Amino acid sequence: MRIGRSILSGTTTLLTALGLLAAAAPAQAAAPLAPRPPATASGTGPVCWYGACYDYVSGRQITDTAGASIRMMQAAPEIKPGDTSSHSLQELALQSADRNSTVEIGWTVDLGLNGDTRPHLFVYHWVNGQESCYNGCGFVSTNRNVKPGMTVGAGSSASYAIQNVGGDWWLYWNNQAIGYFPGSLWSGNYTRAQVVTAFGEIAHATDATCEDMGNGWAAASNRSSWIDSYYLAGSADAPALTVSATSPALYFSAGATATSFHLGGPGSGTC
Image 1 (spheres, rainbow, N blue to C red):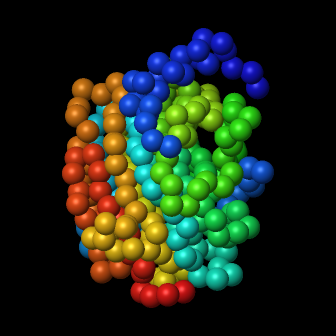
Image 2: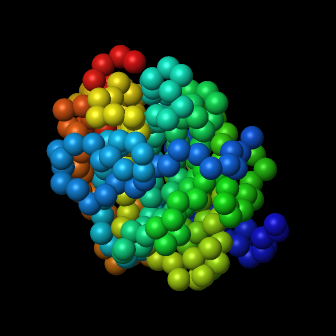
């Protein structure tokens, strides 16, 4: 699908507004779900729903915004060998006030989705609380070189952003527009977000998990994975993340500020 010249020509302006001019074959079928962090208290343990258990280290802000961006480390966390139901990821998600509409972008290590244990770029969305699929289900790819499903460099960093432009939700990786979810998927009723979350997520089959979050280093280490440069676009609020962890004995945060935090942990041990 072709997009208008006016949208393409506005990309540089948009990236500047988002604060992104900084550091540096898609799967179309349904894949294991990646539910968003629920509104649970820190330290309450894994969230078990959608047929699996999930642990989160999340930075969240309740606001009203047209978009947000972060920069984060990309890593190759260890997951259980041969386990196609587990994954480890980091992402940025924008949600409606009722949390039923969501747009997401991030990287994931997911054998079941990608067929290997390298980190891959992904996009996802929810409409009226209904799951969709990774890297498809209405997503319009517009970049020949950067596509959802591609591998990203473990140990490097990249910027990730989501912005509503003309009613469509555009996604950006490393300062480049990669495509958009048309606003028509939500019947034009989702054009601003009220919940912004940047987080690490582990999916595992039981309450015990050996999967790494981030790069597996404990958050307190200066070698651990991180999320920083959090920025809001078109919001009256200043960026102000509140960071929490579902299972801080396994996965936790450190060094949190209004716009950044370290996260990680090796889970219950080596897989």
